[in-house]
Length: 217
Image (cartoon, rainbow, N blue to C red; front, side, top):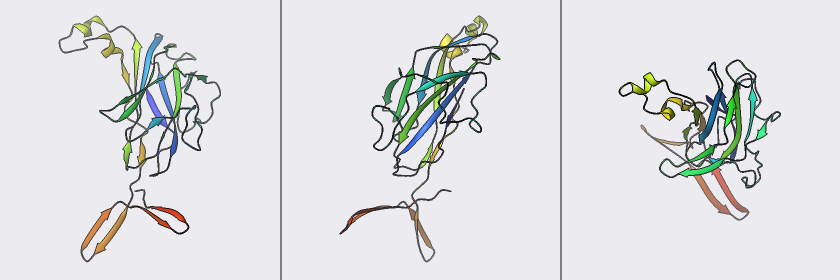
């Protein structure tokens, strides 16, 4: 299971819309039932892009899904082409105050064909947005619960698998992170160099002006 994002860099103080693709592939010789999917957005203000309440000046697509025989390839496949998708609007959105992250949860269930069949890949597409104020690298995570049976020998092993959920759950390693470049300003006096961030507002006779300074390493 992998998660991809179409935009890898978000500029500070500018709203960016991201399109995320979650690819769940069945590598087993039997069909699988996905009970639920939970997507965890990056911290620092990433939010689901609600089509009914998008950021000012933007539009958002609803969550969508489709089946494919081949896994999604971010190098050649389109993030914008929505042909063949069906709407998956029954997501639940919750906020984790401890980690400062929004979570999206789908529990409608999907039946996946065995590996090698035309519908052994589930492609889930949705959008999020952020207006970043902090630089850093923000990664993506997604979890899937699959209806399967853990071998009894594993369940009985001491300190081994203790539950069906533990054996059957699937997790995407953080891939396809978003980078927010840092604001950057430097001052050098003699042999001393000071570096910091710069974000300046001032008002003049012709209106308000904002100056942001950043660089991308």
